[in-house]
Image (cartoon, rainbow, N blue to C red; front, side, top):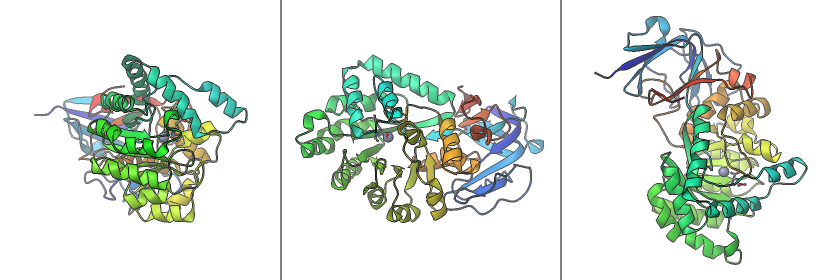
Length: 423
Ligand SMILES: N=CN[C@@H](CCC(=O)O)C(=O)O
Ligand SMILES: [Zn+2]
């Protein structure tokens, strides 16, 4: 018999309905379609779920409980109806949420670029060229140094409630350095992304086509065994549409699913390309055209917004409302990297999204959990109902809204991954 754990006296249990269905054992209330603006609802027991939008729904139960068996959610519902279990945790009125799914992070690097950040705050503009500074430091670092940095950042993420995170290469840009980056990333996450096409390294400045050939050929061969995803920075100063298509098509040929950095620094072809090629996600989406919004709204490609990057580069935030109102699925992620967004905090990104991108608290939490799961094409995380992995967080607060209402405050009381307490 599997050992069971009951978490009870939950003030607000955020369940989510990522696939548009209502969890069988729960009667969620306070349900707001993730794709429409709704006032914050207070979770209460009983009531009826509203039909969900194409991007799934935020849903929550008040005075709730959940049961974990063998690392999976076995039951959710009103605390008064909770079944007995081998162990009991008293949440004492705290909120319980699915763990955050951070679907965009660059964690394998050495050095830091605080001087570049300070110069930007003093008025200098961000350019993709800063990436080369980190490439030089990363190439010079030992495996042990890179592994230590990766472990530190992964620890920060877990402590702030990210139970799943993606990790890209992209600061090596030689065959051995990229292969080393993805191998190190694979030691700590299953969501490893090959980003050999981050920028053209200085030694290929006179031969960008030669670099794309390397990325699509020997570098891909060396990296593919460690990766699930291929990515490309499709932007002026990095790679154009044809090069991006070549890289993502080559990745598909090796079984790597596509995702893309698109329209971060200006409007460009990346979002439409992402939809055309069936990418799981188009990331940044800071500069949107009507065609971009239409393409995202009529596709399975998630728009992953990275407000930490706009915060740290002092750019305008992406227009989340326009995407949501058009029916696109929106995810939030940290974009943790030493250049444009040196944060590992999903709560910080949620606060920015609510305060500065006019997302409701429900939409922001859905996007940071179920939205991130969608962006990673995962059906086992991002929600809490039978069938979901028991990846969850207990907040030191009675409701999810506190994540935006109390910005900068460490609100993560406990973190469970596959039913085991890890933070
Ligand atoms: N835009 C491309 N890559 C990173 C920035 C990397 C850097 O500046 O080091 C990003 O997602 O923002
Ligand atoms: Zn990025």
